[in-house]
Image (cartoon, rainbow, N blue to C red; front, side, top):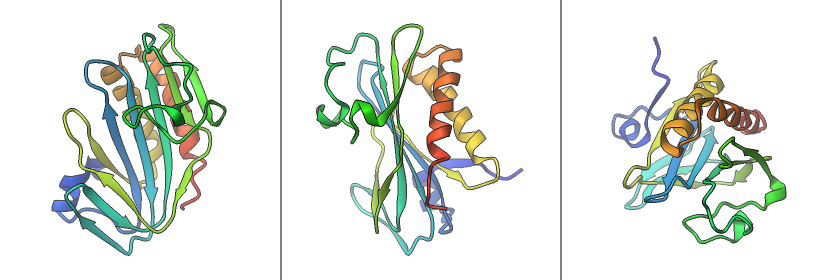
Length: 181
């Protein structure tokens, strides 16, 4: 059975990063809360990849999708995600997001349209409980990422299994709009 996903920096150190493309999922969890940001980047046709102190830089174009999980107790719900502090920010306004509200009133916001990163992008080295995973561009990659999001939304952000599954479908729909392939 082919490997479906691997830690991004482990893949780099083991020379397992495919230049022909893949999907990278990075998390940014806020300490002592279930507020979380995820960034999904699809890339293709890499010219070069290099490691720096801050992370891995890919010399290629990429599509980016953002996922924001806002707990029910979040006090700045009225502030557009683009106008929040840098730790809580994603580059979208409310009208640019699909918004799923869970049974416990947590909100999962997903980019309606991917953002294009031209010529290069950097994936930051994860700190604390954060992660960056590479998903290989296999025929079932969208199923794999959807399942992964169901698990992380349930375990890492406290959504119920059924809410996590419903919210993960928004992620899949966003990935289907990627134009990098």
